[in-house]
Length: 377
Image 1 (cartoon, helix red, strand yellow):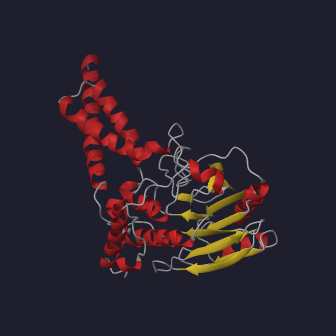
Image 2: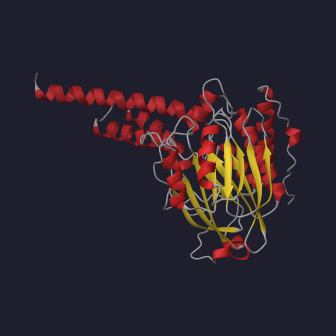
Image 3: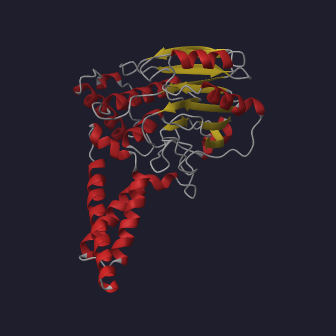
C-alpha cells in the first residue's frame, strides 16, 4: 500500500476518533449540568479533570488531522472543555487560596488531623496502624471500620489517644474518632438515616477553649442508589455546623467533590472555607487507579483557622489515600483575611430543594428540617 494513502487512512481514523470523543464528552458535560439526584447524572460530577484532559487531546487531534467541519467540532469541544475547566481550575496550585495560609503557629493553637477510609474489605491492619503512628496526628478519623478494624485500631491507638467515639458497622459506613485532646462532649448522629452515622465532638483545647468537629461519611451515587440521601445529609450537616458556633471543622469522606453544586451549597449554609482550593487537586480516591482519581476526602473549616499543611498521605493498602491537615486556630489573625462563600437566599432555596428532592425518593427528608435563613440586606 502506498505510504501516503496509509498515512491518510490513519489521519482519517484519528479524526473520526476525535469527533466521537467530542460528541460523547459534550453529551456527558451537558448531562452533568442537569440539577437532578439520579445516580447516572451525578456520577459525571467526579471525573471532570479526566474529561478535560481527553477533550484537550481530542481538540489537538482535530487540528493535527485537519478534520472536516472544524467550524462545528472545535466550538463544541471548546465549550465542553471550558465547562469542565471552570469547575476544577480553582483547585490548582496557581489559583487564589480560599483558606489563608499560616506561616507559623504557637503549639497550643495547632491542630493536626488525619483521616482515612480504611476500605472495610482490606485486612492490612498493621499498615494503617504504622501510618497513624508515624503521622502522629492530634485527631484521627477512620471510616469503613467494621468490628475487626475497630478492634485492631483500638488495640494500637487507645493508649495514645484516650478519647474516642467508635461506631463499628458491617455496611461500610462504620466510623471511629480518636483524639489526644479531651472531648467536652461527643455524640452520634444519623442525619439522613440508612445506617450512615456521623459524629459531633466538642474538643477541649489546651487553653480551655472548645472547638467543634463533625465527622461524616454519606453514601455515594451509584447504580441503584441516587444521591438524594448524600445530598440531604450534607445539607442537614451544614445547618448543624452553622448552629454549633465557632470554631468548627468538618472532616470525612464526602463521596462528593468540592466543585459539585451540593458541596457548594454545603459550604454556603455552613459558612465554611475549603483549604483545598488553590492548593492542588490532592486526589484521595481511587488509590488503586492513577487514571481515575478525584478528591473525595475533605476538611472544611470556619474562618477562625489558617492552614499550615494540606496534603494526601501515602498508600496504606486502602482504595483511599489518607488526608493530612494541620491548622492554626487564631480567629483574630485569620478571620479578617478570608471569607466563606456568601450565604444567599438562592443557597437556602437550593438546600430546601435538595431536601424536597430526597423526600420524593422515599427517604423522608423534609425542607422544614432546615432552620437556616439568608441574612437580610
